[in-house]
Amino acid sequence: MNRFVELIPQQCAKYGEREALRFRDYETQVWSSITWQGFSQLIDRAAGALYMGGVEPQGRVCIFTQNCPEILITHFGAFYNRAIPVPIYATSSKDEVAYIVNDSGATILFVGDQRQYDIARQVIGECPTLKFIVTLHPDVKRDADDKTSLTWEEFLTTGDKLGKEVTGKIEKRKQEGVESDIMYLIYTSGTTGVPKGVMLAHSNMNAAMDAHIERFGFIDDKTDVSLSFLPFSHVFELGWTMVCLCTGIRVAINYDPREIQRAVKEVQPNYMCSVPRFWEKVYTAINDNLQSAKPVVRMMVKQAIRVGKTRNLKYARVGKKAPALIEKQYQYFEKKVFQKLRGAIGVTDSKMFPTAGAMLSDNITEFLHAVGINICIGYGLSETNASVSFFTPPNWTIGTVGLPISSIQVKIGEQNEILVKGPTVMQGYYNKPEETAKAIDADGWFHTGDCGELAPTGEIILTERLKDLYKTSNGKYIAPQVLETMLGQDKYIEQVTVIGDGRKYVSALIVPDFEELAAYADKKHIEHHSIEELVNNPEIHKMIEDRINDYQKGLASYEQIKKFVLLPKAFSMESGELTNTLKIKRAVINKRYRPLIDAMYAADYRKKKDKNEPANN
Image (cartoon, rainbow, N blue to C red; front, side, top):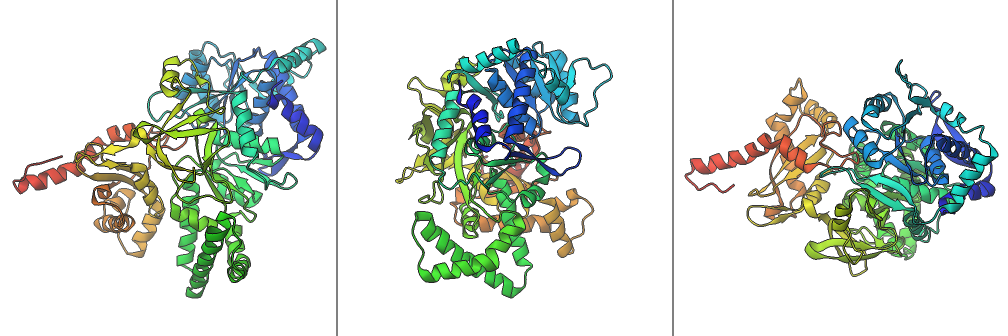
């Protein structure tokens, strides 16, 4: 019997009627709870319904919805049947959903809201293996001619009257489960090419749980709460949620990502997985509020941050006790400044906030730790079942992504590529043996596609995606993500894509924060009637240029952004410019904005031509 088949009954016996999950009720919008006992009963019902729905051992079921308790209930119901959940991002397009359902051969598709139901209805005719749809949100309106859908309650009811013979067969499936069974099929977000189904076995998840839990000596299963912000289709959130269920941490599930700031204040989580952009916005908001504060308040906060950096980064970070005077000052500012600051965000008792998926600037990392927000930066991929490494308090180093977890080997290969080997690494890509052979070499090393180096401490320093490295026409290598992360700190910049591959110098496409830009324009009495007017205004352009130049003062000349264009519309998943994990699809953007990009370099070409100089683009 597999670990995650035994987990819920074990936790149910241990915790009984204590809260396991917390969620915002669909209709009342009030936070409600599911106890461990209730969780266990719902899983049993889901397991029976899946069996009655014809799901076979190692059969696949797709879940296409925003975060909700029904996802976890379905996952564990699938495990009881030795079946495989296949998460699909809630924001996925019709083509993406059809591809994943067909590639996985799923027989049931669970959907959340009306949009997802409408997509499911469109694809069911294109997916021969798909038997029926289950709708989760009570407000979904089914088509009049729909003969293939059940509501969540209708679905659960199909398994409620199981006889002893059928329940015995489910029990037999539980007992026959082995660690080599595929536990999850996680489809990559597809920055290049079509998504690939990452096969993660129960053995992969078991190894990940053991390696993570041994590092967490600070968990209190009596009071700790984790807020689920990232989607469960993201291996980062999924893996962390499994850690929570294994250790007894309550999981509060945020349904709507747009309400995350409200949810944080209401839940007051001790833990929350996030991507760096969340903390960049927090940092910007704090700085904005500080700028508008009275001079005496600004002075006090700045002094508090200096003391916080000394105490938390110079001493606590390396496991040392701060000098008495520093500690006394810190405790004063903790009461007068830091508690209020964290309370305004909603993280009064910050134990650990895992952060990954992109780079977070050292400046923001230091600031957050100074004020008592314990960011835990890590690194991993779907193919490694999330974490390869992460900060391990005490003794972690700014500028790294932490030490590899205990079961993992890491080495640096050709072109500084990070190679990973160990029991958390996937079995391969589903239906793609050639892609698997490219990713995992004959010696078992998984080639991550990320560049980096190992610090003397053994920690990983992440530099760039191998495929994202640019080489200018002058032969200089540029790491665009470093520049993008640096500019991401700026309050006026929402998104940025650095250009430069094969070009003489570096340029950028920048999506401003339109609200901040409009506020600046109003303050400076810059007339504007539309976003287009705003981004094309010379004064606005000059202001952004000056801010960019301030950020890149320490960079070599060939690394600096020489030209940029301000865009009037944000990059989005709907337009195909971002993946479901909000990563930039560089090939798409380069193709779509080619005329604008060429124009930046053409202007340089024309200047040289006017001077009778040879053009070198």
